Image (cartoon, rainbow, N blue to C red):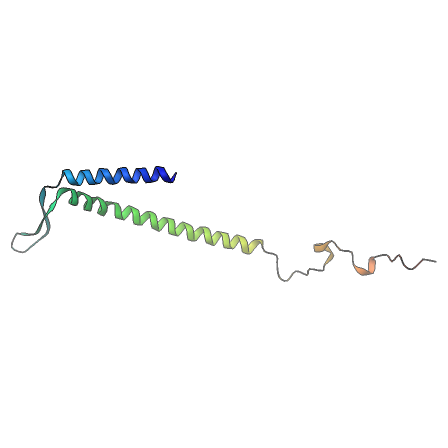
Length: 117
């Protein structure tokens, strides 16, 4: 399974590098309007702009899924701890009572050393 994941990552990286290499022409990117009607302006390659906005678009779902995974792992740990706590025997229960150990009390045990007359 590890080899399949590695091959997929290598293929995706090769496709991404090829996309950026084929789209290396620079395009104007207007980031913020200014008071005089102009913009804060950069010229970046198309591939870099596409990669940047792809990563910006993937950030919110990734953060959301990480938060859900973190919350679920905390919930599972809490449920496991409560299950462990409820399955432990009570500390107040006597360990020498006949009902819990199945032992016969000493008064009721017959003695074989003294003959009955």
